[in-house]
Length: 262
Image (cartoon, rainbow, N blue to C red; front, side):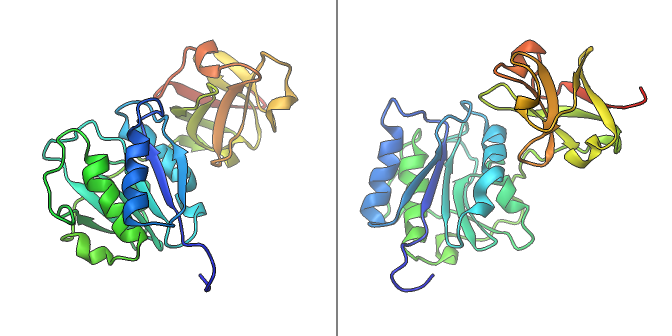
């Protein structure tokens, strides 16, 4: 960063929604403790209480932000329990959130370091139900304002990993995998590498087959297709519709890549 450049942002990811003022409470703490730092809303629509879904979302974008970015991530069904509040430093970026796998994508970086948050500054008694405001936002503000990472707490050697992606079985043109995520459009992400569509004509999901295509517009409205999604893995979709609904599919549903000769 050169003189005059804006500071790196704090990026917020939560399951709070935007109707109740909880996101605004986080932003109030950040604006007070780290004035002038840009705030970016990644998403507040993570499925309620689903750290795995939050981790999958975080994995899509955290490396795209500049060095020094702080990710304030709060999907915390265990709030107020003995689960640890942590901060992570990885690949020049920083994350704050509960130790429940939510920050797993950052923990996978080779240089990742993790600390348990010691508490508030100034000291106080956090709400048992709103650590996002009372624990995580102050820690994120500390980092965004240039505070040292090590000052937040002691090292953690066994943080909870993210949900990960199970490995597909097979080879290019013929493979078996599973659905790993469903987006708001009803598109089905899978664990089958996109390169494995080479030599394939169809993808099976349940008892149905959909053709392999390059993009959504290659089929008529309402028709299913399989393509390489933006994450580099095979995706099953329905043009102008929901593959999740049409195929009664969810996380864990099996998919298969079918070669041209089959």
